[in-house]
Image 1 (cartoon, rainbow, N blue to C red):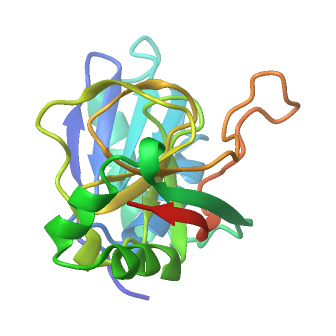
Image 2: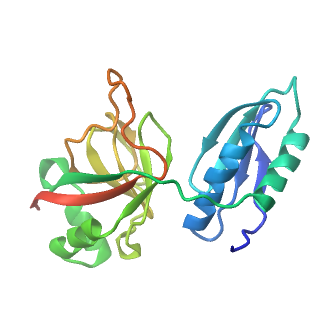
Length: 221
């Protein structure tokens, strides 16, 4: 088993700590360790909530029961002794209408990558993505697995309204909008698959560890 470097642990307010295991770039092994430590940390005295992120973990605790120093030492210990765990997730196939009025950044994305529209989209659909974390808004998946050639820094000026179902790129991550909301990510297409439905028995479609394969439903400039 590979030994993960010691994480950085910092205060996140008076009742929370942020454990950051990220190195130079996102690492799948580190993410599996984040998931495993998150499960173990739920049992710590005074812990109220655990929120896994991309190679990081937010731990919310009750300051009347414990303190940051105690929780921090326990997290360091868990990080050192816990075995990473690959989550047995579900594979989801997501059809995408690339480009057109609901994918207005597709041409700019291809130009940024120095590729044709067809090669850019084919690279996007050829990868298998992992749901590393759910956050930012209910049901929003942070997806790892994007072809490095397709990375594109987020917009300098976020849009105030990005539609539900927008398939998006932000830096080295891919994502899908579960609801209409502001976003600085680039819009490359649209899917009719619903990621969040408050009326459903299970409102959130995706879970950490799930896999995603995008499929071409249509493509236009």
